[in-house]
Length: 257
Ligand SMILES: Nc1ncnc2c1ncn2[C@@H]1O[C@H](COP(=O)(O)OP(=O)(O)OP(=O)(O)O)[C@@H](O)[C@H]1O
Image 1: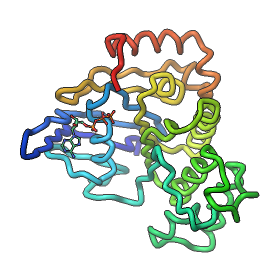
Image 2 (image 1 turned 120 degrees about the vertical axis):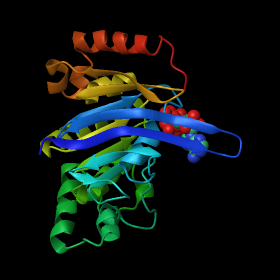
Image 3 (image 1 turned 90 degrees about the vertical axis):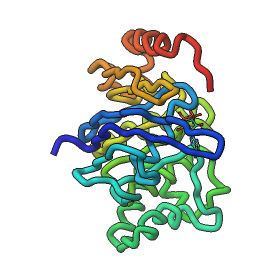
Image 4 (image 1 turned 180 degrees about the vertical axis):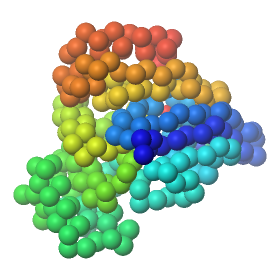
């Protein structure tokens, strides 16, 4: 099967005592297996709402989500997360944190634990397996969070501004590491970010949302040369700069939030 995710005519209305907010209106798109798609747009355009609906954390007011051929009706082990905060448990070692997702899913076997250790090794963290999160840098902790997510072997990864709390150099390093890891493992991913450069450098496709009501403004397919490069190299390409200008104009040249 070629389609990993189908977002079908999703509409979300939030109703509070004061008002009803049309957070998303008629959102539809498909994501192919192994594709990396970014959602960008000004504050309030519904990025987090859409990610929560795809994750099964929020049932949409209207519409449907299909992940790996199954209708999403709640959280599923098929979907993994990486968030702005690493949410590691401070009292657990790095190894124990890396195995946390497997423990929660009730699938922690000897073999899976070996898999988590192998991922720690791939991320250059094996020597730190007996350390505690407070003994690691922010970038290292986010790498542990990535291991914890990948260890459960999800079919889809949802990345909600995973680098926004990191310093610039660490962010660039992690962008490369995440893209290389996901490409090697042929994982499908959706990234929510405020950073246009990050979206261009990491993605195969960018979906720009507009607010009030949240809707798709435009989609951009990255040129092959940008897709083939790792993010750091992609940033050097002339195609990258042309895309940045084009997408920036979609924001009206000014980005709030
Ligand atoms: N639980 C809620 N109850 C009521 N309104 C909400 C709720 N969550 C979000 N909204 C509204 O829905 C709209 C979309 O919000 P959402 O957080 O999805 O946007 P966003 O693009 O992720 O914003 P940001 O970039 O600032 O994180 C906004 O108008 C917001 O005020």
